[in-house]
Image (tube, rainbow, N blue to C red; front, top):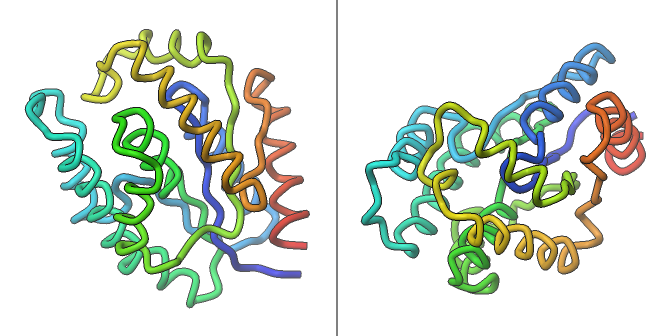
Length: 208
């Protein structure tokens, strides 16, 4: 039985990604796995500071390429300071977002291009890609309704609906491009059903 691996959760805003990933981590810990749970942008002090700059609603003048580069910089520091040491220590790493988010949000949502954003991130991550990515596929209207109901909206939450719809299209392209790594999960169901399928997939694809 394998006890280590790098697994990421992806999905547009409102997909329930953070809720599901946290419940999956709790279940895996109950099964006896040594799990490191983290998130992007952020996860460690320097990356969290970059996150604050990226998502601060006041930073309306931020150029789209600056945004993409800041995400990559945050990702690099997070990778070398937290993810890689955990994997070297034979721990299971589960991350809420990773490079696929940049491909969807900046590559397609911002219109920079998936290939261009992927090149920026390859420099940052040095080919350290997840073994498995679980993409929570939610109806666009459902996801958007969850965003609008949030009390605090960060800089990306405040983008208009057209941006978020482009992000969903971006994820569809990313899922197709990396279909050997990414598993799509229907996130329009109950939390319990989603968590159960996620755990089953993790065991089949990484741990068993």
